[in-house]
Amino acid sequence: MTGYQLRKLGKSGVNVTSVSLGTVPLAGFKTKVDYAEFERVIEAAYEGGIRYFDAAPMYGFGKAEYYLGHAMRELDIRGDVVISTKVGRVLKPASRTNRLNTVYGIEWVDPLPFRDTYDYTYDGIMRSFEDSQFRLGLDYIDVLLVHDLGHSWHGDQNSIYLEQMRKSGYRALDELRSSGAVSAVGLGVNETDSVIEVAREFEIDCALIAGRYTLLNHAPLDAAFDELQKRSVSVLAAGVFNSGILATGTKGQAITYDYQSVPREIFDKVAAIEAVCREHDVLLAAAAIEFVSKHPAVATVVLGGQNVAEIKQNLASANRCAPAAFWEDLKRYGLLPDHAPTGASNTLVQE
Picture 1: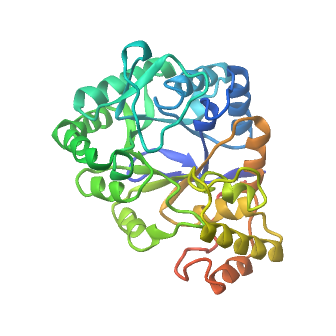
Picture 2: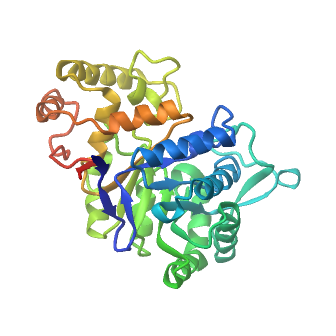
Picture 3: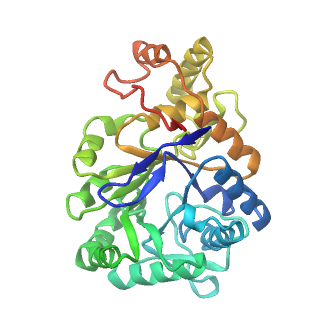
């Protein structure tokens, strides 16, 4: 039987499967997903070996947490899985709350009747955490991540929110972790710089980083991942398909790169990677997952999917291994840096 490796998050006692499931696509991202389909997806992921599930108040304005908690109970699997959610946002009634304008604005389909507001203070983090407990229906949450703290999301306003963390937010995380209300704390962001900045100020266990380390993005290899390893900060790697192009390839319909139109140089690079894939009979999506999982800083690769078929397809890709010659050719053609880890480590373990 094939299963997924268990990997420890930092210095915590939390172990996550090397492949995990994020709930953004299930919370109304571009299309409605009803509860019945949500539960079927969670069940398929669980039966496929996944034991770590990530949510956030932002996802469907509470819907991802609400559905995930109910699915855990209906499937009777809570005791077997790790759950993470996020703080930094407090949900308030949509009828009395202005909409946030952000660089990564998402039009959720059929969300719950709330809107998000930023709050990285002690009180904001505690309220967000307790609200998440109610929506999830859980008395404890395994992993708590500070959501979207960084310049890429907040721009010039980031200094305000970082100061909130310094004045009282870190204290909230410390209290929650030391009391046992959560077992691990970290960040959930779309950049690596903010993780380094926070890790130098406060001891975190992990960081969910979306789209910053992929077959197309190698910047963390320069120094960031080395420092995170030295500080025992585990990476939860999301967005490994760069929002689509590394899943569908250049022939896909409506392909995107980081949720934008695909730049010509990115399109050409993917086409070159596809040529090497064909030469070695390797699926592009499988290579995208495996490449990220090979870095020793990465504890898990967070995948998604809006239905059972997509989950099964992603898990099938995660279960494939490319030959060593494939990685050697990518480096030989200048498509990967020579120092990129491409050794034997993989997501799978034989039982």
